Amino acid sequence: MGVALGRAKLKAKRKALLGLSLIVNLSFLGFFKYFNFFSESFAETFTLLGVAFEPSRLNIILPVGISFYTFQTLSYSIDVYRKQLEPTKDIISFFAFVSFFPQLVAGPIERATNLLPQFYKKRKFDFDKAVDGLQQILWGLFKKVVIADNCAEYANLIFNSSDQLMRMQELLVLYFLLFKFMVIFLVTVTLLLGVLACWVLI
Picture 1 (tube, rainbow, N blue to C red):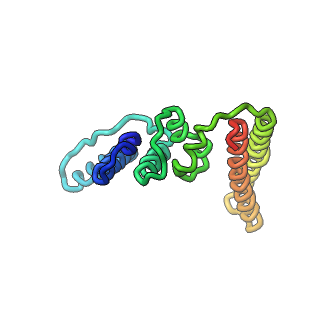
Picture 2: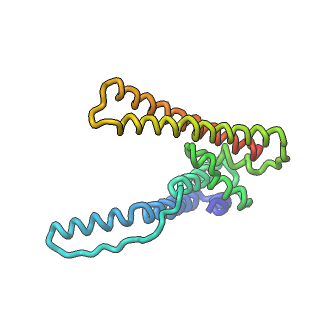
Picture 3: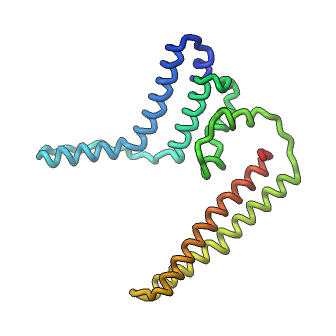
């Protein structure tokens, strides 16, 4: 679709191709995420009207990160449509951009103009960056396993110790949980920086 957008000269044709890209991508997203929801909603509506209706269901596992992949792809199509980016013929770089998992975990949706060109650059293995990346990954895992998980254990221990918590106990649970979530956020950032350093992308 991006190559076709790049070749199209007429504005009407470019708009039609962009519209087609939007429709196809959002249709896939809506089908996988909302088919069962709407099917059950229609069934409940018919039941209220006294009409027996057995809805069809999709017994499939929802693809992980489908929303992220969809909007990454749309970002590429929109940037090509606006002529802010040349359409890529490097399919490996394109799929690396769409499924770049460190960004998938932390977000937000990145513009193709900013990220895709970085995959074109030839990179050489840098031992120091790889070591730094592994150290950050290990440090992130340490914070998750030793600090965050133990905060959760103490919070659960206090919370389950009695039916009625005293105000001081409630505050302790609150502080432990807040600290846990703060550490998990820091862990996410540390792990992502570690992975990026290992891939020599920063």
